[in-house]
Image (spheres, protein in one colour):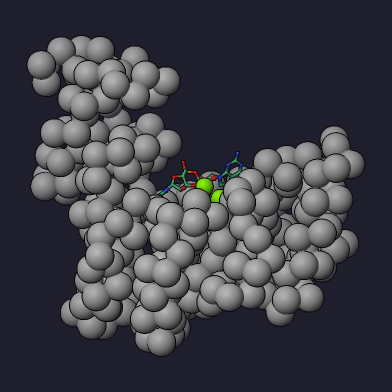
Length: 283
Ligand code: C2E
Ligand code: MG
Ligand code: MG
Ligand code: MG
């Protein structure tokens, strides 16, 4: 069966419509093996200060370095890892690796926060906060630079448990951001009640800048909402000089996107840190 899977290559990965498909179930042992054989790696995308062009933070994004298929992006395997529960051990591996890499990143001068994605499914582990706390201690992770990126789905899965986790980790100095903001179901009261310090404007709205006045209005509204609630804000998916100019005009402080850099491996990111101004290259 494993052989057949290899033969079928990407067709199997893309079969996401049919949840009962035996192909999806067959991928679980491959993912488990990938974890044991250290086939995962983290890429880093810079967060860029829109005033100075300096790198101020980064986001860690998982990649699967498959021995035959090459580099596989998370959209093809994270949903399967979530469905099977494997996202829990994979998620701990991510935090461990991010903690290790953070040492090299800060030694090379990284400022700001390192965003690490947390899936809603990871909260189904009752020991999430305790395990993360242990990893932080074991690895001596600088919590003042650690930020977990949650989606609105995570906040709704089990509000009480999620809030407890956030408070436990928040007490250690960890921050939280809301990823893909605007695409889910967060309410204003949730933004007030939960310790969320940053809103990340979903890239679908940024993509509409210059194309769709509703998207522009949504971007404008999220930036002013963040300001009024005294939260930080980051625009995701900035690709064009026009999108950049629009965001600068609204005084959006931080952005990520291909305009500055795609996610890159650690060594490439360390080189990026030597570049004084990432705005220069996209104008
Ligand atoms: P996300 O957290 O919203 O990450 C942003 C995604 O946008 C990344 O895709 C990034 O490569 C992509 N991106 C960055 N700049 C641009 C741009 O200018 N244009 C466009 N079109 N895309 C851009 P990626 O790396 O494929 O990750 C996809 C999703 O997989 C992430 O979305 C996140 O939800 C999930 N993910 C990634 N790494 C992890 C992880 O370690 N743990 C968990 N639980 N989920 C992860
Ligand atoms: Mg994210
Ligand atoms: Mg996002
Ligand atoms: Mg996302």
